[in-house]
Image (cartoon, rainbow, N blue to C red; front, side, top):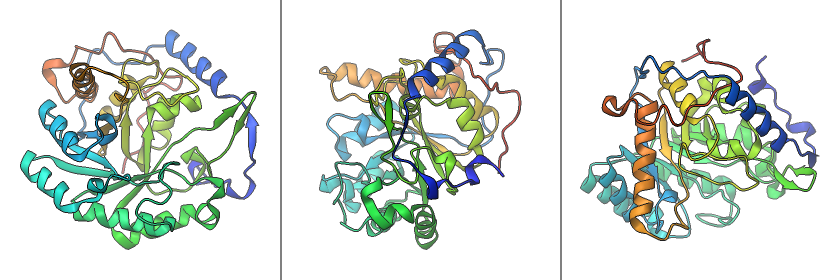
Length: 332
């Protein structure tokens, strides 16, 4: 039985030894001494991999600005994070902007963040149903969501089966995102239930976030290889193993982002990649826009989507994987 099938929900503990930093250092040391990136061949999936822009990457985080920036830089579509801002759930506005720009609404991010407890509905399951129905109304096939917090009661206890049920009811893919343990000194506080690590639960669809994986001390290539058949969505970003959830532009951190994207392209992955980087504290608009342009170029290069730029980022952002990429992941 694969690790992803073995639910540990019944025996979760509250804290664990802080191992994220040591794991991150171990992975990075291995990456520095083993090269797996294939420079000789440009790999490209047989399927159309779309590259979108998340509204959380845009400052200000408005729907209109997200579409504007995505259209300006040549993204395939957008992901809208549903927040307190009413326009993030305004179907007419979103559909109008999609028609005006010719961009697809690829996904919605459900308001499952800590600071959005009562957005859409105070009942967590109704919140997911409403988000899924919003997604259908704007043509999005995927809803990204975070696992619950321990204190969210029955919602947390029944999360795995409940997510499957809502997906079946609405016909929308609910892709659960990997998170990370919170740290307090020498201990990690396990605030997410059933787990911050999606590999430990029997989900049907998953989102992989590089910044979260960095904070958690995960091996990105190994993880993506293991969840390949369930991976529907990728949040493209980077991290340096910090205590913070950094959301750096891809290539600015020390995660094996290029290698992971090439792995997906090489093995004919068929999901969506969405750029989710932090530009909020960048004061100059041209600099923020360059970050979005560079992130898109990075994605196209390492997914084999842009033949003219095939070598532009490869040489400067190459690291390696402890697992290697010679064995093809399974693919549905």
